[in-house]
Image 1: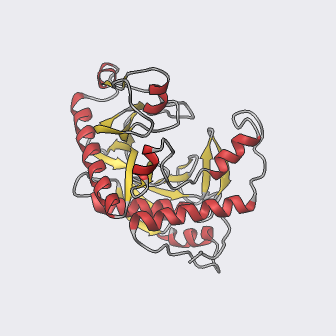
Image 2 (image 1 turned 90 degrees about the vertical axis):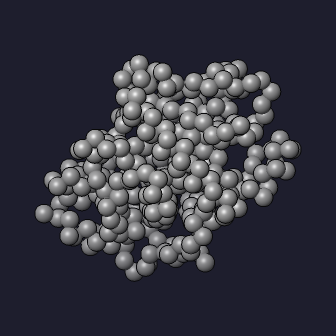
Length: 319
């Protein structure tokens, strides 16, 4: 059922909560006792800027991450403490490790750091792995691999890394690298297995890890959501691959593609996004949630603005 239309949550600023940090998508508050409140807004970010706000996006991402955190806690400890609101997770405050762990099982991707992009540029040695000639777009690899990148803070850009570079630059200790590698591959295997039960292929994903006050490594941020992962439809993948066509996926990039076709999004002002495009993108997020989790999306009541509901649910966290 299509959820009742509701105004999108573009901002989650609360003056009476401490230590506010506004990210591209999430608003964060650090409490004095070491907990962090993370509110997922509906902001849609691309081209290093916010393009629009997509109704229900923040709830979808929070609840899908919750689905996966619950199903992987036996593999790797995570930052989650509680969920006071459908858009909010309260977790342990972590020091985020400066390496983003990307796991890939297919020669795919469109960004400058994706292995398909680099492969088509002629590179055969990437991220500490050597690739043979003759691979095709979207071909499955012999086994999942880790392709780490630098974790770009303050609007910088990620850059490819090899394990040797990670250790030589002191980004991680040898023990930390071994731990996050084991965690990432095990998390990905669990993700692929559960996705397969839903008729989906988990193609690739990225993980963020951090350390708590005791130095323990925990999984942070989000896990296996449409914003951090690529999914394909398993039933149609073989025929699409054989025909050299793009595999069927949750195509949520209507807005990004439209903007790129109108202006130079890195330079020009962003034009107003058509309402029907925003609505279509919202529906794709909801479709992805239901397809991946097997659960029905519970739309919030239309009689209470999302911001007011969050404010009410966060009342116990005010000093």
